[in-house]
Image 1 (tube, rainbow, N blue to C red):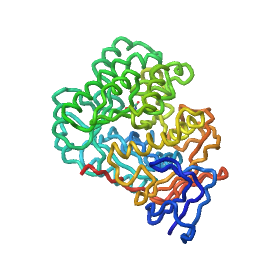
Image 2: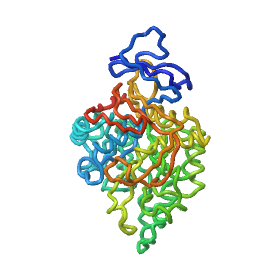
Image 3: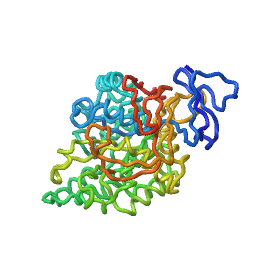
Image 4: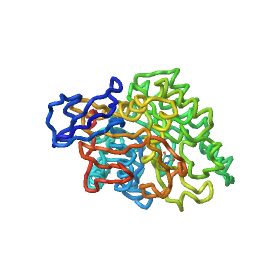
Length: 439
Ligand code: DOR
């Protein structure tokens, strides 16, 4: 079946263009086709914008083992709704994904349950170097240099040196310094004030760990991606020390929330790394606009309402975001903070480049027909009650955003549409394992 999307403004690698896009057998086969081309289906997208599907390179979908919080079936529907066509998922499930069997098991689950494409990181431990060296069908290795949800942690310098020296897959890490966090926690251990989370996981914890990982990556000349940069200090450090080996990511909550939001949102915005100050929000935006940070992702990490609304410090860290991340960024485009081309750079092209994802991240002939059609005029309310994630709450509850994904295609199949207020999910479609050029 040959489908043509016509009359949309298409965000191509070289910029926006009013061209038609033709897809067949899951691929983009023609751009700006001649008027005489015969197709089976034509979609008139007048007034809308066509983007490559969003690639979210940091999510926690909790399967296996923690499916009371989230599962791949719910989370991948939320991705489809949010314009995300490929997700890369973190290893802190139960069991942790720390060997090939763990990766293969997750792939098998996703092949049965996921509406969109997927990939699964392998987690580092102090003892699984051989697994890390031999892993396949994975984008890369995740290291918790500081601990977060779960028990994964590699904090010993010799262990880290070996991982950076002896593995070949791209590396990525949660950068918060364990010793700093523990010492701070001792000081605040009797606190029941959620705002102290940002004093425990403070600016120092973030910059110390990011500098440590940067040093390892540059000395060992090993491709390394700093996850969820949360401070202006880290952004400044990365800007003044550009390295061909190091890329970085910022998550939407670190762009949109700061400590002034604790009184309003409480544990809904308890995250690791913690949210920081307004000045950090601003420096992180600047880093994106200056191309000092390449990727925007979510760190989608749901917990149930009951877990989340326990008293600090017992409430766990993590918030859901995949169904709103693109819309939050589109709202910023509508406020003139950034351009649609920049959003495509941060959420499509850069993650594909960092993780060497084959044939994704761009609208180009021969690339996968993973696409997202957006309506920049569409206003919509983000509400706990309209979320499709399993946990059914969002820290953006009550916000009205302008700009929304209204159709999502995965390998040329329409998996989600929201046209004339009628939501449709192609429930039986299944995404595929993304291909990584790291083998
Ligand atoms: O707040 C967080 N929650 N940060 C992480 O790095 C992990 C995540 C989770 O898995 O809950």
